[in-house]
Image 1 (spheres, rainbow, N blue to C red):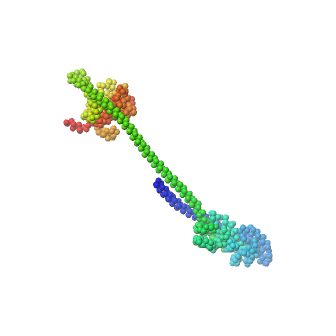
Image 2 (tube, protein in one colour):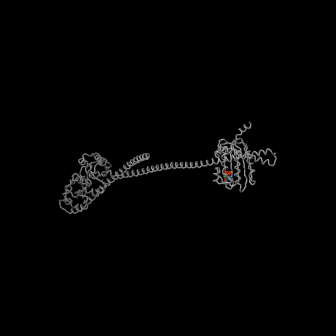
Image 3 (cartoon, rainbow, N blue to C red):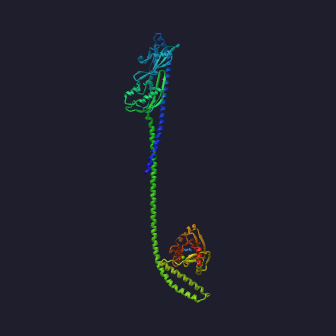
Length: 604
Ligand SMILES: Nc1ncnc2c1ncn2[C@@H]1O[C@H](COP(=O)(O)OP(=O)(O)OP(=O)(O)O)[C@@H](O)[C@H]1O
Ligand SMILES: [Mg+2]
């Protein structure tokens, strides 16, 4: 959780820093573009003035060549009276009344002859004599410097000389109302919500402005008077730049005239200079800085919000992932614990059944020890009499061999009975172990079984082991006889060959791991039959006590259990391989005694 919050904080900080940096760069570019745009507007206003004034001068030039106008001047100069020019001037005025205050005729001394719409209106205009002289001398059209024709209204005069035979016979003066010009040429262009264009002269007076009462005032002076508490230094700097550089742009703090708030706001200002005749105007276009900044700020906020959302999703994803993973691990531990609990339960149930089984075995032990004791008693006369009889007859007597077999079998039976007794009494003493020649023990067991097995079961022996083993000969015989008996039972139906083989083998460490034996020399005894064989399920159970597939009369199911326990007592191993319908191979391994050790033994 803490990691998630930490990660979140780092990501937010990085994104905010990158976002802010990008925002600053982007903002600067946008402001610069906006300034260029405003400058283009200022320049286009300047061009409009140029075109407009040229057009006006052309119109006046044409009027100065009008026959009626020429005649009026001529007659005036000759002292006559002629009034047809009134209609011409009237129609001239009506045609352009949107932009002009009036049109007038002056004689070559500069005295007003006629003015339209009214002489009075014209007379109010202050026509400088120097300007008139200028036109008379140069014989060129002239545009006067702007002058306050009324409060809050500037005008300019275009003075056109009327020439006949290369002589100035009079002047036509067209008075242009700059407030009207502003409406026609400039007011239509409005940059942004608050922005506007304005014209000042180089002395700092406002010549044209969207707010009429601003016209004619000295912009900085009036502002300073009205808001003395505000810092107007940046506006002064703008003015200085406008006069000095003529063209450029500037970001400064000033006040929107229409705003009542007392504080200054940031503005963008682009300016250019327009010159014509006596005119030298600074055209400036300005707009609110915030208006330009606003969409960029909006974009920044959007980017930040989207980034935060992405961070939130990523961190949330991580958080959910870790939570789910934690839950999964908890479940894994829980499942493991439950599995172990289950296993313990199973073990408990198994050990319970083992306990029952061992109790059963104990009871059987008691029973068998009784039986064995009885057998032992019964065997004594058989053994005793067979020995007496053997002593009384010659070796070549026809029943000598049979008697010897009876004697041997009863000896073996006595030994088994003795072992059962020892085993069931649990006195801890183990059967007597001696050094045995493996081949002799095996051969003896074959000899014993041969007399029992029917003739249709063939015995093929291949005894190649020569090593000595340390063990109990009766028990080893018991192992082999059991294996032979099982093999015989498996082949009882269809007959077959019982193959008995033995060899000395050396078990490597690798083979030893597979067979669960220490590496070293072993005697391997193989009992192979071609009987019914066993399926996997039967194979798994053959060493269990009382497991038998034979009827109650035939098998006890103890044979292989005893075999296994004897082999284990001899530190050997037993391996059974079988296939249903093909046969079974049982391999028994007994540890071979070290040869050197045997040599030493022989010397004694
Ligand atoms: N060579 C074999 N071929 C086929 N099945 C065999 C072979 N050896 C053992 N079995 C199977 O293993 C079972 C258990 O053998 P085990 O010798 O322990 O008991 P048993 O032969 O049934 O009875 P007994 O106590 O008389 O020996 C047999 O009932 C038999 O099904
Ligand atoms: Mg058996």
